[in-house]
Image (tube, rainbow, N blue to C red; front, side, top):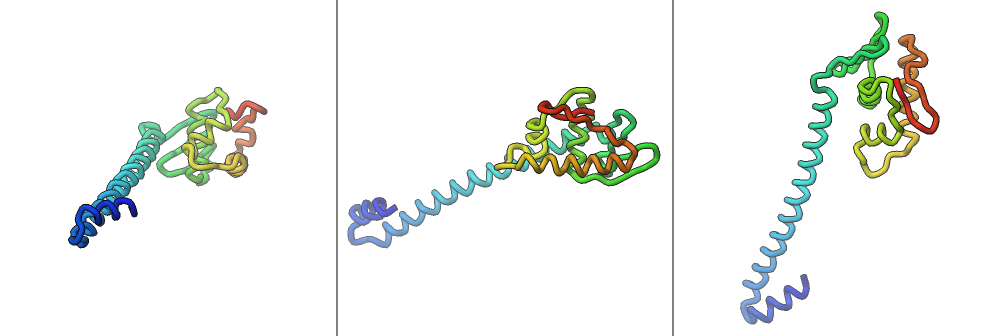
Length: 156
């Protein structure tokens, strides 16, 4: 920016005020462009999040597998007349596993699905969510509902 100021002062000579005005407009324009790019990036990220939430809810507001009913709208799990509430991450974990019933879903796939490649999510974060979810499933009478395949991932 200093080089631009020097160039403008040479070009405009005595009329330095005009040069300063042009320099300020150029600076504001650059800041505006940067802000517009940042706004577009944020908007794109929000659109992606909204699309993902619509996809996860979509037409599958209720998912049933192996006796468990997952209500994604109410964020509830139910089995044999018992019901409990679930967090957003617990719902997403179960939805991902139930939609792929019988298939093994890797930890990496679950982490990517849950947190969409955010800066860095500790591997232990998934373990904590899984432990809490399993405790809720146990209270519903589904102790071993989610099976762990060591070195491979999880499955329902």
